[in-house]
Image (cartoon, rainbow over all chains, first blue to last red; front, side):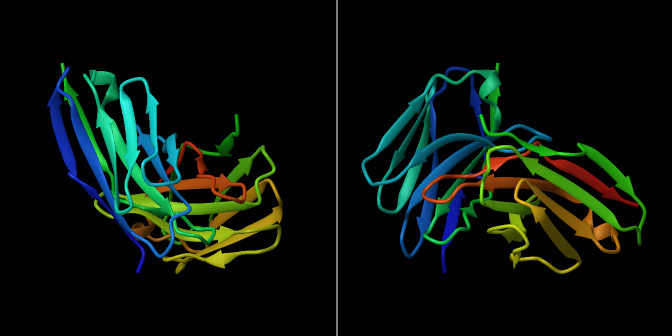
Length: 109
Length: 112
């Protein structure tokens, strides 16, 4: 069965304290892995798509990486405005996308 | 940019009411989806559609139906609202290929 597991469920960091969020997946065939950011009460906002192992994408303080079994979202020197829930999702080959339950990130000033 | 617009941000309905949630996308995407999102349960797929007048059940279709009469519009219908349908409802669309979803801003539905 296709599965996506995100860890940790919640993470509290001090402003400037870098860390990584993990997304491990088990799918029959990966056509794409996606990262989204979701603010409270709003819909998820697209961040990155990764297609193959070894690929990396960057946007401001965020960098996403992909291996054959997991993806990491690295956050460098985070700021309070980076506080959000980060969702990982995989596209296994049909037209549905499977989501993890997310990591709630809280950056303390 | 692709826009997915959900007609209401907040709704309060009474138990037993028929509820319509509307979603419109403006980029000619073939695929549209309805999810509900609950704390601790993540995103759960209710229904999706690959094309006009086509619909497929997702993981939790019970108590819901959908309508897709035009390519840009995908409606979620709660036939007889119940309190356990209180949730955040998210509409999404995508084109074919290896592309992710674009989400709407969500509808927070409370059934009392």
